[in-house]
Length: 342
Image (cartoon, rainbow, N blue to C red; front, side, top):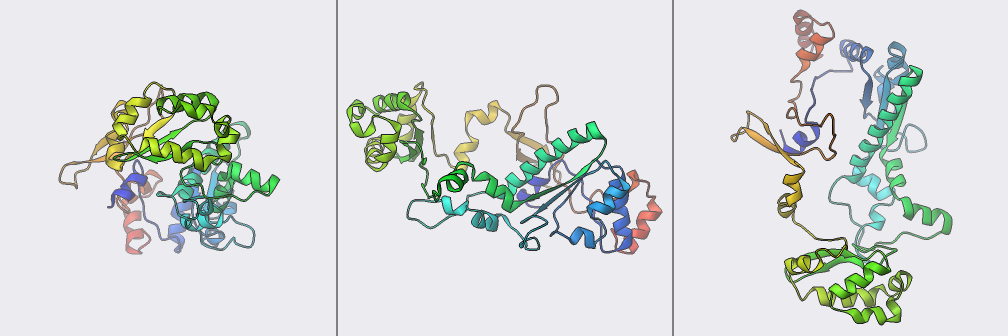
């Protein structure tokens, strides 16, 4: 089992079913009878072909929330096309606005479109459950990677739709603020931004460059954005003269948002990691150390805190357990196993 698989499948149970066989389909429908939510990730139309589409499932459980994720959604000219994170990032504009000016488009370092689609659907499921509490009826939800990424364009998309302004690659800079970037120090990189005139005054003083405040090119944020290249050059020349630690001390207490560009090692050594319980160890007998470290729960609950209860399951690890919960006997399960249904 990979650490990747373990990271995204913790706290889950796993069963195996051959949905192409009538007995496998029947097991799934039995599960659906008492389920609150069913989530599927087939190409649109495939669930219907297998006899487990929304019409069938809602026919046996009107209260179920049936949630589907696909590349492009269940309608339109691309409905049958397979979709992946990188393709959606490319086709829906994210790659076009990611990367340095004059440089090729790049994909973010993690699967942002995949994760955000899951988060969008998660919120939609909660909303649908709330609606069900009022109406007693479930509904079908459709989410797609393409639509998620289009929605994530936010201000970039709004600028195009209303003013015809094409998105650009700004690297680590901000299209509407300056200075707001990542600058090289003697031994690393520092991210720092001044979001308004007051913050720019503080930054100029902490940089030891109060004369910037008298320069007409930098009097307002609009002027600073217009003269971004000149301003960034001055800031970069100053910041490269000291180490990261020196700049962190110089900016401490300034009220400016700032921080080092950390390696993954340094990110996990951050004092907030321990303070906010963002690394947890769970027992795993199969590894030599007896435990595996996992990223903790990022949202804290005051009354019922989330926790990592179990490692990710092995394929089919809970088949017998789950089938017994819905009324299958050991003999029934053995018969299904003989037919390679489970």
